Image (cartoon, rainbow, N blue to C red; front, side, top):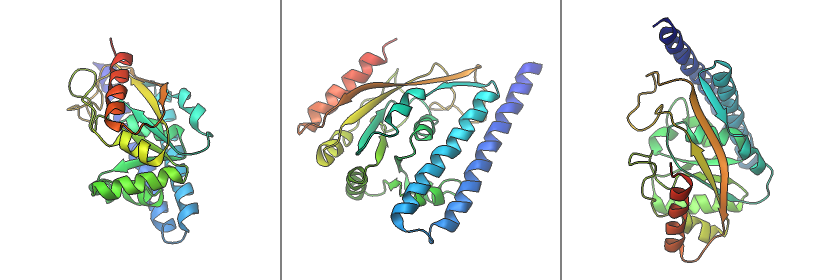
Length: 242
């Protein structure tokens, strides 16, 4: 009982610390946004988000509540050219885990999140992509890849709710074909329900919370993007079999 109370307190401290990091960076980003030209602002914005989340995950591991191994993604940091990062989506933490290791990472976000006090200014400075319009989202994603961005996408579209993988949604393989960039798969492995579908952020899960991210196969773009999407989904299902 005492251990659970202490662990819950530590979890709340970590969540408060995440809020402090996010609010501090977004306050600074709000000031920088009108002052910096697009390209330098974009580079600084993406790097600031990456290192802010990296600081948070280091704190989470130091607390003993989490065990995280995402070192495999460091191999991608300095690779030249645009790249699509395609990952399965077991929890809300997935995008934060990925961009923490990739200072050139680009996320696609809901319009409401682009106005969020904890996320909005930083996302706009980093030139993250808003999904309010499918056509505009595709155009901006392709442009970002041509600039050398590493676009983070979750083919399931939402967190996993059916078994170990949801059906993949179209779009990702079309972007790869239009931009002529490869798709690097990332396999996220966790047996924790924390931040999964229906799990409140403040509810303490079984401890420790473990995440392991590893690089999977890299797929070349294909003009038959529907067939490629099917191959990609089959590959993830094979990799995530119990």
